[in-house]
Image (cartoon, rainbow, N blue to C red; front, side):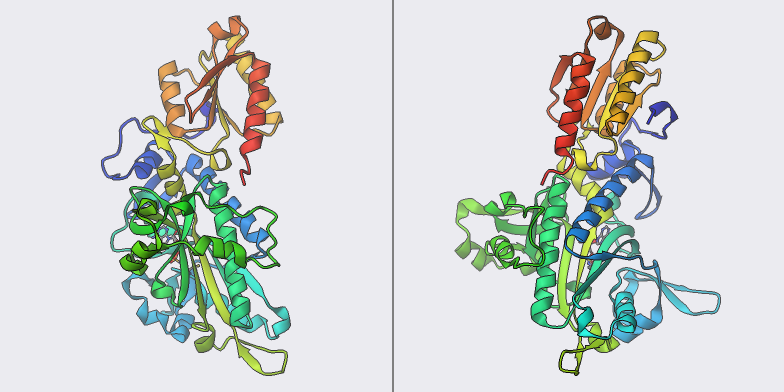
Length: 448
Ligand code: 5CA
């Protein structure tokens, strides 16, 4: 992409309305713009990040055997009356009437709709187990939308729903999502910790939140320090096999959110030096709730003995749009964002320090084409801005590498390669720089 043709309206000043660093940086780097309280447009740069996050979530859901579909944002109130949640959900639910005065709502979650689809389509235990997911916008009329996309009113969620015949099988479905989540967040460069959690309006009695530690997190959390560096399950984990040893390794050490925290147990089980009490961001939440929806909605299948069995269900959410903010909270410095390669909007910047200078233009375009041919996503700054402005913009938007081409260096046969994270700079020949860049980027695309 050529910057001269792109849409990147960066802001030099920090917007006053933004309290936390990820919100400030998302506005400044032209990732998002607010449309109404808690509702955002995703500008081109932000949208690229959102799509990459979404794709990692999708790949790990598919790996774990879940199947993608797409349900609408608007739902009929009738199914929510069947489950009993229409009244319970209260003011967080955006209720709408169509021209025929039929009650609709903008879905805050999809347990009812997926249960209805499943109930009408699946009649026999032979079709189980199944896990269906979608990645779709949700609306929750939060009292205090804040921190930008972290607590929005409209937000993008991946929500998966599992259907099983027995509690035992449903536990296996839960374990598969648990493992998928550990991999999903690790692939985005995040250290997530599963913590025993409250179930809130979704319900059920088994639930884990996946938490990223960050000072700006909304939740107070407590855990054993070793969990921060816990082992991420491998890509070739056997999702049809027994995943319980992995779950055990991750759940045998103390980790709880505020609502589930037990100070006595914490002190008993965790030595003082290993006690972590910190703020955290909830990036995922998984629930096992058995027959909470299938029972009132009559979702049953015929079991092996011919009797009808009410389905055992779980649901599994990932905050896709929230993750964009969480990744920035985990990766930034004074100059701006520092993206990990797998979610970076472009994998490298290429800065032409003197656009209009024939030799520099030719060298920059040549390198741009070589990188593109190698499959690298590159943003070429071909504008005639001052060098200082170019550097500041690229540091702000945080692409993992900057390849800098200027007339002086070129005369000596050199370009500069800067690592955004470490700040380290190397002078290399153009060929060596390109080769090194390709190797570096390719090795980081799928880190676990
Ligand atoms: N139906 C279940 C699981 S599919 C569910 O809705 N779970 S949830 O309420 O915990 O939401 C799932 C994830 O969505 C959360 O872990 C969080 O990362 C994200 N999320 C929830 N509310 C918001 C919000 N207001 N803004 C941004 N992300 C949110």
